[in-house]
Length: 147
Image (cartoon, rainbow, N blue to C red; front, side, top):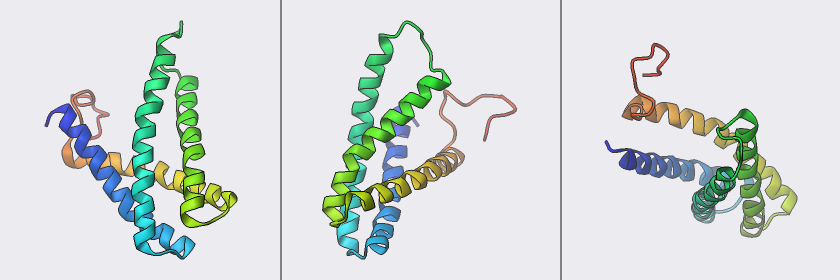
């Protein structure tokens, strides 16, 4: 599998499974129809994908201007906080309007989604790598390689 086809497959499966889980959970949590919350899950997923692309483009432009190269823990932390913080700023009003809930309730829901996606991303990536195999950049004969 080429690196590009692997990335596309991984992103598509990740988002499809996330939508299939998040839609019904939002339906139960906010007593809304599954049709509505599945639609919201698709919108949230689309926004997250677009924000991911835009944020990484902005971050990498900023990063290219820095004197110190590499990705230290502090830089990775800044990246993660910037990405998730920006995504929350975008998603909270969308969730509030769509679900007809307060911004406070939308913030709480967003924090719940953040916790879910933290665990889900690790579990999904591990399972995907076990099923599809590691990408060439991570494969090798290391004794600590997970595969």
